[in-house]
Image (tube, rainbow over all chains, first blue to last red; front, side, top):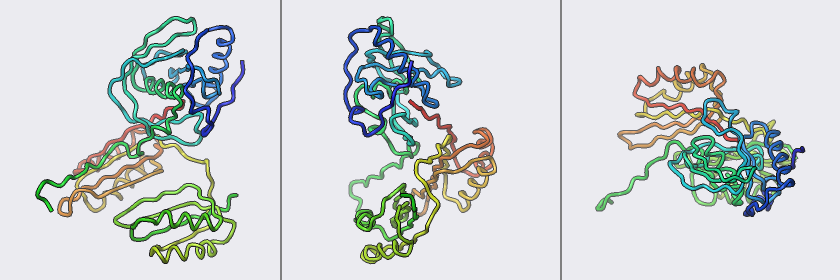
Length: 171
Length: 173
């Protein structure tokens, strides 16, 4: 196993849309092991997507089980993942191995339904919420050539001043 | 690389301040670092790190023409500064209520005692002249955890101020 090199913004390969995985062969399984080792080598990192290492395949790994007090499915290998439905939204702070020394607020769906193939090639369905759902949305963005920088909202995400519209007749 | 100056620039807000100032700095050989630029009370305020080999006096002289044409006041300090040393906040505190003298001092004092290191604070007076509302947004590091911050704010809440404290659980992926 080996730790792969992480591409960092503004590397053009992070902007590419990744291709679906067709064969789950030995080579891919080895790559998945390397990808997981790379994820675990990043401090506090709970997810990684293949394109972050320059491999433009629709493949991501997440594992948020190190976080206390949250619901999670543990370690998940997501091959050709697809979000089937979204529900609710929340602002949360994100950072990314491909964007060192920066974090920002991003709006994500609170709950998602997801389908993906696992390493055995079996189609799986998942229902997720909160932190885990956020991690998956962050990773699937990588498969579509998007970074959290593309979705930043104001850091003052909690309170928004309401616009005051003048009534008709007011001067 | 790395002779950092902190520029403080203030003037009545008008279009073209950022363009004018940054153009002059670029032409003069400065490289910008982190900055904060915001309109406060009809003034435009700039705090910015500029990497510049010369002296603070020559940097100030470089900005003199643009400062005069846009009526800006410029202050320059040589600083010990560096990039890529962000500290991540782990808590966000918002306070809002009827505008009253002393809210900031009380809140800041109580939160400091309870272990909050403030990294970022923005406050605003909204509402109207006869009914002003005070809104404050703080991000910081809760050095003793979030619990003590909650208790610290309890005293302030009695005085007609609403507060929320939320942990920031940054996702690293």
